Length: 169
Image (tube, rainbow, N blue to C red):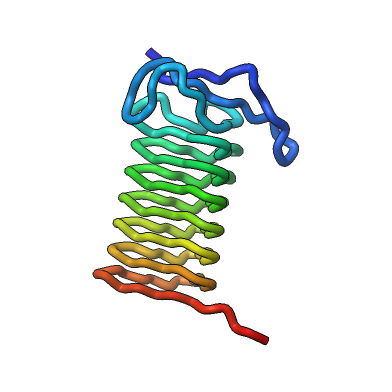
């Protein structure tokens, strides 16, 4: 049995037609009849496990949320991005191109993750951080403020906290 369906409620967003989802059965924190966020098609959200898209979050293009990935509030997942294995994306975060959020990572605020970047393993990234190209943030890292992490950068946690500050001109 399918866990959700596309409703007739649709919005036009960035020249795409996105459909609100509705749960067909209880799973995780979701109850049958609960309305979720928006997808372009059923390939954007897996019918298995407890993954879900909440509120006004949007998942489109070839992006996928699966394997207990959660997307909330006004977050956007698009391009070929993936949110999976207990990855959480919320607030106004945008995950796109080929980026992956997984393994208990939390992305929120105005964060942008793109390119082939990956955030995983209990990492928390928030505020106005940008992670792109082939960068990887993992482990118990906490990244916040106004930062750019890019290229082939690797930031491993173990309790590491990095906060960028805005410069006053």
